[in-house]
Length: 404
Image (cartoon, rainbow, N blue to C red; front, side, top):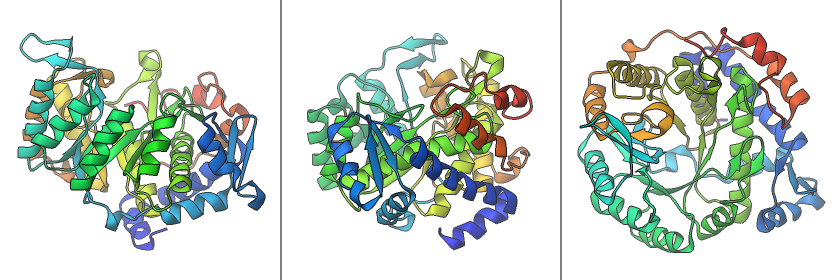
């Protein structure tokens, strides 16, 4: 732990919440040791099998069980925040929407073009508020999209690699500029390697490119419906990705991009990214990683509005104020996304970026202090890798937490 950061976190979150985060880390270690992560990818399995004789890992029936000493060893190899190329408190244009919102007609669902990507990159480049950018929207051609982003934005970038051609282009870019990250959801909840991407995750790790490792368990669906429960599941999945990367290439840059998410029962248990509690949950994830002194990248500042309404802009201001109040490393999904992160509004990006300059920490709403709920781990031990919608903790907490 970074003791200086622990004291900073205590000063803004309170001692009890920081104690909760320490327990979340221990709970995540328990999850990796006792529930493990389903994995069929041969090279990942072999990386852990080599450590079975030392008692550091077990691979059994396509499931990898990671012992706590191995996690701590791998975390010690990850370059620290002070060595990373993005400063603290950096807001990114991030995420990947499948569609562009047509600001002229007020309709979503437009397929993005290269011109859209170039426009987004130019906005990122000229704005002092924006610290860097992810793709924003997804083009079919990954290589083309990388080239457009590099051409128009000199700030830190992240993009996906799902082909050998994309890996070759990313490696080429990395030779000339070291401020890029390759994004992977290497796991999918609950506790299962996403085999669609695992092969290229291995290739990227071996190539030594910085890895942006995301995971998004959803409280009430694939994780317990309490702060520490969903944080522990998210943390465990990302720690597995970090350990895998460090075994394949010790010392490789890894970003903990855990994205804990909330199922909202009022909207048929879909995710609600506009909640105050969504921002606070991700702030907590950020602070745990800050205390562990590993680069960290969370989600906040977005909305549940389908259109760029005044409420959508209010949600963006609220999220930004909370993140400024508590402090963080990197934050994505701010500025431009609409409901479910499906549509990307360039008009909202421009307006929210202008609004952001006026937001201060004093604008943040009050949040209820997050304390450790013993029932979170009780649920994990009871449900394991099952579904949590009918879990007694979910039904007990409906309307009491995560809803505002």
